[in-house]
Image (cartoon, rainbow, N blue to C red; front, side):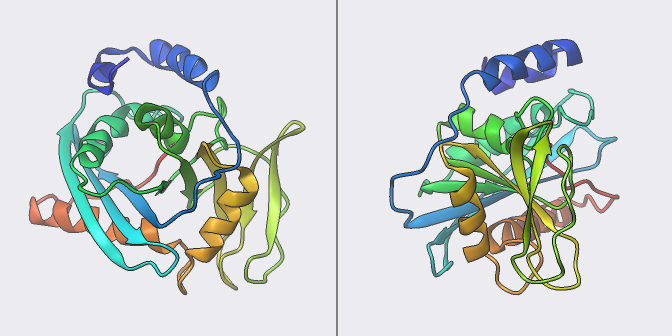
Length: 233
């Protein structure tokens, strides 16, 4: 199914499609050396049909910016937790297609497998674009865990019953953890190590931090200063 068709789906059809996507997920070690990496973020007002998408590409591991891309789209798909990818992926795919340099791996501000049906935005987009992806979320959507100790890079596994779905990672002292999960074509262990390598003094990793700044910039330039949502499910 092409993302342009998402806005015509009912929520029940979207859930059924997530179950189809789940069968295609490939959580395995990424064998290719990473020479560039990108961060992606989306911004929107949940009461509006306008969606702002941004991607920032960096050299890796030094994280120097080598490219950016943005897109503004519209969607009629409703704002429903667990189904936000159906609002976000079409605009994000447009930004992806406009990139001159495609990254070896994409970090998205949201969930990968730490999702009820294992199909957070990172997994969903990784499957659609056929690119290795990692989800790095600011809030927990799915999975139980014990709070990591208050030390940088302390971590705690996140489980759905007995299945490991993600890692709660304390990126810096005295702040809430971030929630890491592989999206597609990368392992859980690699996902955590890559995100740790992308922490540059802030709670969230540099790729998604700069993508967040980029989408907010284009949103302000468009004259949209209403309350916003920056959350991938």
